[in-house]
Image (cartoon, rainbow, N blue to C red):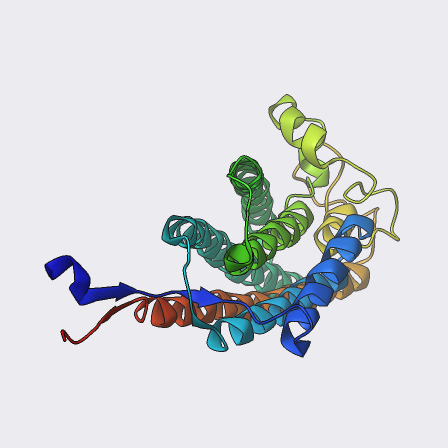
Length: 296
């Protein structure tokens, strides 16, 4: 009799014809298509991808809030929660990287202004930035490897077999797109600096990242980090090259990079909140799965 005291409940998606359901599928399809054709080589592209991802999460959150009770596969939902923790870690780590990058850029700007007044300490500041860029590339590459493992794990999970599993499918699709967008972000961040290109230590990074979308071919390169490298560093060294660009050009590139960093950081902040909001919404719905039924 004790076993009959509880009724197991869960959630189901509205029919595919429901506007929110259709909008969710459209957002995901659009992001998949855009992500496959976008190089992710500029901050504008990265920000646009993150903005689209935010909309997909808002749609998914709306779907969760609309669900009625029915049977659900709790294990699959738990698996999504595990994956979402990793996505939160990547998002948080990327925001920390943006914060540090902003600090280094501002330090160089200040050092260059001091140099115009006779201060010669700029070399130390730039060397610190270059060391940070190498570490940034290394960290981003590690996170890309983590995301690829998540994709592999998702692809090897059991297939969905009924309508009651459609929410899980949406969550998996959202995760798949999130991984893809985060990979584009990290590829943007991991564009090797000019000083790192000739180092054997970075051969693995070069194989992963030195594609058309990350390579610095000339001053028209659209990756703002790479643009700064191109005008600040001699190839294969950490020395400032006064022959590559004037101080004014360097300052302009630094300003553009600072704007790019600020834009990405803002989007990552919104994305972090979207991840947290969806987790909270699911937790709230799951709290109603097991409801006590009065004994008769």
